[in-house]
Image 1 (cartoon, rainbow, N blue to C red):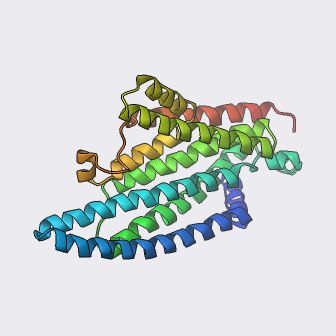
Image 2: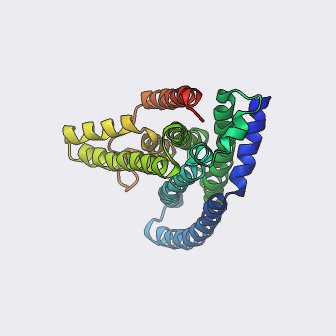
Image 3: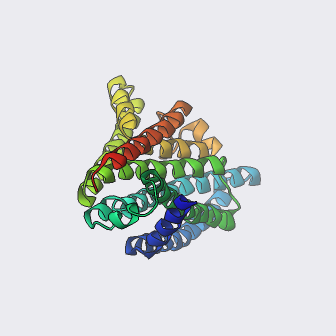
Length: 284
């Protein structure tokens, strides 16, 4: 019950942060721009498919595949916004309160320290769930209303995008018990940069049959498995024909295994456990 009080306070605090409203505003702007751009692109595709393909069934398949590809590209941008929002809204959740000494007020109350950490983490998770549903769900709904297309494995894909945000939270939670807000931010963005660069190295290595490059990408994913969750989500939600023909920019040449999801869950749990241990031992 006491932990839920911290959860409620954390959730309300996140809503009061300007960075959250900035991320929300940019998200709304992106959804509007994507909807307008996609509408005109789809109209052009529809017109050309009618003239190029006489069979109506083939024309509809073509429109669905094009819709699916553009949806994945849009979700790629949404995934980036989710990572940035997760990092920027949580980076000072613990570190900022320690540096400003406001954590002393909370810790002096009849609260156990693990209740403070887990309460904050739960509040951030609720905020993340709302943002993922609004942004990713909104984009999927937008494409569906314009074209009637919906991707496969929607719930699994959104769940993996959610897990990526939770990985970011686990990193900022642990970092907040050791570092200042600025240093914590540097750490999480550097780790994300390693994962992002490693992901592209792995894809290029797989396309060129370079085993060394693939291993480099796998090591980067083990260091920070967040980007691997997005790659797996995008693979699950890709149009089936595109996956079979491998004739698209969104096709993955190297796909994370389901075991990586298990690893990501253990990774987050271990970091949160280390954060609880360090926060309990730290002199506030």
